[in-house]
Image 1: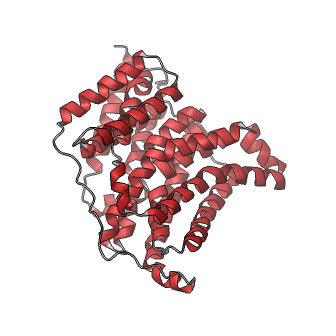
Image 2: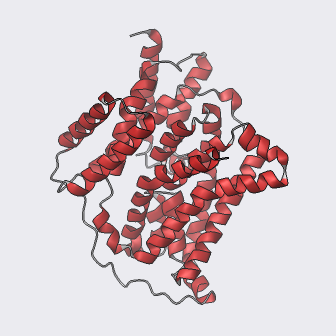
Image 3: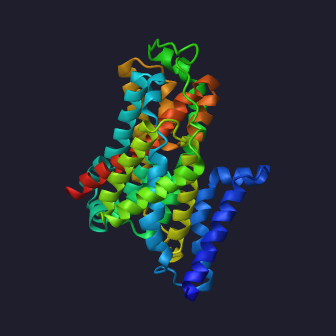
Length: 380
């Protein structure tokens, strides 16, 4: 093993260990820091700090091809196998419609806003189209709807530059944290705002058809071997990256829904660790010298976030749906598996399974919505 490969492997191993450990710390100060600077962002920044401080070029080490050929495929299988479709019935049709339309707004608004900004100011067209800053919007779609997995995959598919990707990650984390605080406040007032808008939609007194517990009969070793075997098979078939993403997404979906007692809980754990690994390996390529974002880019993202929320309120009004579903669905789209149930618990703890299911659904659809965003921009 060359010096560069040895150093890179050591940095990634230390980074993953640090991120996994700091996530478990109960210290109040550290938790407050992690609320605003999530542990997964450390996975990206720490390796970059090493390469920057010691002036190492680790952009060509073996880990990058290993990540693309093995870790990302296993991550896809792990996340996609965690959605049991039969459990979606407990959520209900109208909240699902609100959720999916909220996702559609997130995926299409950046394209609409770029066209609108370009009509107002020709410099915006140069920035987003000429200078390809639209490639920084695509990972946001993945991050908001699908979480880190979709964000990383869409970064590859859109060919987002490393420096732009880190800037987007920082902006994204700041906005999502602020949004979470706002949704905590909104959900507490959802009933009164619903009445103000003339919406009379009672929520269920209790859960109908309590969601199944994650299967525990499939041994973790079998899950790991299945993931490695399937990832290796797809690798040997030499698919293009997009073909690999689609194939493994469908295979993962089939694993979680057609194999009895599939261990979805362990699958999510594997997916979480793989995401940290991918982020740490990506950090080896990062160049801190270009960590900036134009104000026009930030403005567009702010408009995007606010219009998403207003659109969901309008949809809830048209569906005559209690506005408590707006922050639940919005956080399932923007926050994910941890923040969606946390915000929901501020209103009613028994609705948390609804939020978890919507968040899982968000995780497994984010890449598809991001592909729609890429298609719209490439059609210009």
